[in-house]
Image (spheres, rainbow, N blue to C red):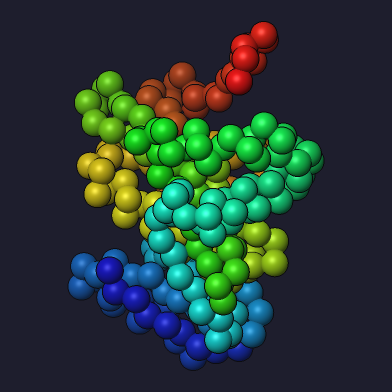
Length: 223
C-alpha cells in the first residue's frame, strides 16, 4: 500500500488536489492518505481512498498483539474494557468483578482468541478482542471482532484505522476469508469508521434483506 501524508490546515481546501490521488489510482496503487490537521476534519474527496485523519502531534504510537502473560498487558486490557463498559455504547455499567478477575485467564485458554493493544506515549489507548470462527460456505476461517474500542482521550487521532489495519493483518496471516463485527445502530461515529474501512451489512439476496444479530440469554448457567 502507498502511504501519503498530507499536511494542511484545511484539508478540504488544501494544496493537495483530489485528481492527484486519481492519478495514483489509475496506476493501480492502493492509497492510505494520512491527513494531518490542527484538528480532525472530514475529507469530502469521495470514497476511492482510505483517509486516515490525525491531528498534528508528536505522539508516539505503537501497536501489537497482546501478551496475556504480561501483567502490563493484562492490566491494560481490563482497564480499557472496563472504561468501555461504563460508556453508553458499552452498556453504562462497569465490568463485573467476575469478569475483572477471570477474563484474562479465560482468554488465555482460547487459542482462537487474539487481543490487539494500541499505545500512545506508552499509555493504553485502545484494543480489539477478536475470535476466530469458521465460514461453512467459504470453508475458511473468519475473524470476528468481539470488542473494539479507542479510549475517549485518544479519539480523533486516526487510531481506529491503525487498529483495524492490524486486525486485518492478523486475519490475513490466519488465512481468514473475512472480518466480521457488530455495531449499535445509534453509534454513528463507529459506523462511519467501519464503513470507511470497507465493512458492509451482510446479505445474500437483496430480496431477503440484511442479516439481523440476535441473542438469547441462558439462565442458571454457572460462570
